[in-house]
Image (cartoon, rainbow, N blue to C red; front, side, top):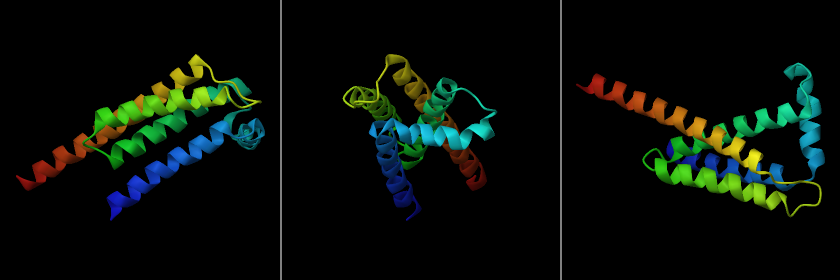
Length: 132
Protein backbone atom coordinates (compact mmCIF):
# COMPACT_ATOMS: atom_id res chain seq x y z
CA UNK A 1 0.00 0.00 0.00
CA UNK A 2 2.85 2.40 0.87
CA UNK A 3 4.53 1.72 -2.50
CA UNK A 4 1.32 2.67 -4.34
CA UNK A 5 1.20 5.92 -2.38
CA UNK A 6 4.78 6.75 -3.40
CA UNK A 7 4.02 5.97 -7.06
CA UNK A 8 0.96 8.23 -7.00
CA UNK A 9 2.97 10.92 -5.21
CA UNK A 10 5.72 10.66 -7.84
CA UNK A 11 3.36 11.18 -10.75
CA UNK A 12 1.53 13.95 -8.90
CA UNK A 13 4.86 15.71 -8.41
CA UNK A 14 5.37 15.72 -12.18
CA UNK A 15 1.93 17.29 -12.63
CA UNK A 16 2.75 20.00 -10.08
CA UNK A 17 6.13 20.71 -11.71
CA UNK A 18 4.48 20.83 -15.14
CA UNK A 19 1.91 23.35 -13.89
CA UNK A 20 4.54 25.52 -12.21
CA UNK A 21 6.71 25.42 -15.33
CA UNK A 22 4.18 26.37 -17.99
CA UNK A 23 1.87 28.60 -15.97
CA UNK A 24 2.06 32.37 -15.93
CA UNK A 25 5.44 33.65 -14.74
CA UNK A 26 3.63 35.58 -12.01
CA UNK A 27 3.23 32.28 -10.16
CA UNK A 28 7.01 31.89 -9.93
CA UNK A 29 7.45 35.49 -8.84
CA UNK A 30 4.81 35.14 -6.13
CA UNK A 31 6.69 32.11 -4.73
CA UNK A 32 9.93 34.07 -4.87
CA UNK A 33 8.52 37.06 -2.99
CA UNK A 34 7.05 34.80 -0.30
CA UNK A 35 10.26 32.81 0.19
CA UNK A 36 12.73 35.67 -0.30
CA UNK A 37 12.83 36.76 3.37
CA UNK A 38 13.80 33.21 4.37
CA UNK A 39 16.50 33.01 1.68
CA UNK A 40 18.48 36.08 2.77
CA UNK A 41 16.92 38.30 0.06
CA UNK A 42 18.71 36.45 -2.74
CA UNK A 43 18.20 37.72 -6.29
CA UNK A 44 15.59 36.12 -8.56
CA UNK A 45 18.12 34.38 -10.84
CA UNK A 46 19.90 32.71 -7.94
CA UNK A 47 16.54 31.69 -6.52
CA UNK A 48 15.55 30.18 -9.88
CA UNK A 49 18.76 28.15 -10.11
CA UNK A 50 18.37 26.92 -6.55
CA UNK A 51 14.73 26.09 -7.21
CA UNK A 52 15.51 24.12 -10.41
CA UNK A 53 18.05 21.94 -8.64
CA UNK A 54 16.01 21.36 -5.47
CA UNK A 55 12.71 20.63 -7.23
CA UNK A 56 14.23 18.13 -9.64
CA UNK A 57 16.29 16.54 -6.86
CA UNK A 58 13.00 15.91 -5.06
CA UNK A 59 11.32 14.58 -8.21
CA UNK A 60 14.29 12.32 -8.96
CA UNK A 61 14.36 11.00 -5.40
CA UNK A 62 10.61 10.38 -5.30
CA UNK A 63 10.70 8.49 -8.60
CA UNK A 64 13.71 6.48 -7.41
CA UNK A 65 11.81 5.42 -4.30
CA UNK A 66 8.71 4.66 -6.39
CA UNK A 67 10.65 2.54 -8.88
CA UNK A 68 13.79 1.35 -7.05
CA UNK A 69 14.61 -1.42 -9.53
CA UNK A 70 14.34 0.81 -12.61
CA UNK A 71 17.11 3.33 -12.06
CA UNK A 72 17.93 3.68 -15.77
CA UNK A 73 14.28 4.28 -16.66
CA UNK A 74 13.95 6.81 -13.84
CA UNK A 75 17.08 8.61 -15.02
CA UNK A 76 15.80 8.74 -18.59
CA UNK A 77 12.41 9.98 -17.39
CA UNK A 78 13.97 12.79 -15.37
CA UNK A 79 16.16 13.91 -18.28
CA UNK A 80 13.27 13.71 -20.73
CA UNK A 81 10.99 15.62 -18.36
CA UNK A 82 13.56 18.40 -17.82
CA UNK A 83 14.21 18.83 -21.54
CA UNK A 84 10.52 18.62 -22.43
CA UNK A 85 9.50 21.20 -19.86
CA UNK A 86 12.17 23.62 -21.04
CA UNK A 87 10.98 23.13 -24.62
CA UNK A 88 7.36 23.70 -23.60
CA UNK A 89 8.37 26.97 -21.97
CA UNK A 90 9.36 28.30 -25.40
CA UNK A 91 5.69 28.00 -26.40
CA UNK A 92 4.44 30.21 -23.57
CA UNK A 93 4.33 33.98 -24.15
CA UNK A 94 6.02 35.03 -20.91
CA UNK A 95 8.53 32.22 -20.38
CA UNK A 96 11.65 31.05 -22.15
CA UNK A 97 13.33 27.68 -21.99
CA UNK A 98 17.10 27.62 -21.89
CA UNK A 99 19.78 25.00 -22.14
CA UNK A 100 21.28 26.14 -18.82
CA UNK A 101 17.94 25.72 -17.05
CA UNK A 102 17.58 22.22 -18.50
CA UNK A 103 21.09 21.34 -17.29
CA UNK A 104 20.28 22.64 -13.81
CA UNK A 105 17.16 20.47 -13.70
CA UNK A 106 19.02 17.42 -14.99
CA UNK A 107 21.80 17.92 -12.43
CA UNK A 108 19.23 18.24 -9.64
CA UNK A 109 17.44 15.13 -10.83
CA UNK A 110 20.73 13.25 -10.89
CA UNK A 111 21.50 14.33 -7.33
CA UNK A 112 18.08 13.20 -6.14
CA UNK A 113 18.32 9.87 -7.95
CA UNK A 114 21.80 9.24 -6.57
CA UNK A 115 20.79 10.10 -3.01
CA UNK A 116 17.69 7.92 -3.16
CA UNK A 117 19.64 5.05 -4.71
CA UNK A 118 22.25 5.29 -1.95
CA UNK A 119 19.59 5.36 0.76
CA UNK A 120 17.77 2.40 -0.81
CA UNK A 121 21.02 0.44 -1.18
CA UNK A 122 22.04 1.10 2.43
CA UNK A 123 18.58 0.10 3.68
CA UNK A 124 18.76 -3.17 1.75
CA UNK A 125 22.25 -3.85 3.07
CA UNK A 126 21.13 -3.19 6.64
CA UNK A 127 18.07 -5.42 6.15
CA UNK A 128 20.20 -8.28 4.82
CA UNK A 129 22.59 -7.93 7.79
CA UNK A 130 19.65 -8.18 10.21
CA UNK A 131 18.36 -11.31 8.48
CA UNK A 132 21.70 -13.10 8.57
